[in-house]
Length: 192
Image (tube, rainbow, N blue to C red; front, side):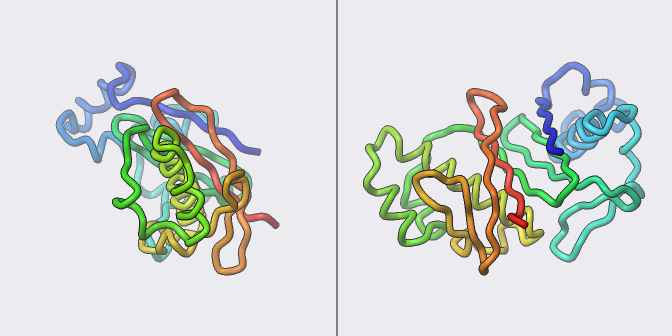
């Protein structure tokens, strides 16, 4: 089972919550709140069911988990978009707003094979492909609970297909999520 949902911070449905919690000017807290509301909707719960902090716990690197529920979830956000996914198995998701990115800025994140692939691409495709690769790496690192301190370069992606990634001998299935034309969404789960 895999379900996902997105929401924008500017969606009118969230504005009453922002006022209630007095977070109209705090985008970080808005992202957290929207993530919890989307998570509740994915689980067919009332919108406010997951607003209490005691519903959640975190593992060593800060990855949130349900304290008393077995459903796995992951949340990502970029610009004003929040992406939430749930599954019956651990997962990691990443979303990135599509924007121009220069290879030299992210070069340290890629393996030798990935760099060789990126450098052969026409300039028009290089930026988008690099951003797509980045979402794969971040989704894998979030699935493992390591997050970005887990070093993106340790995640090797099979280019050009990008349907499998590997880190420390563990393989991950990669799925690209169709979420919005201005955003790239990626989900990673260990291959059992």
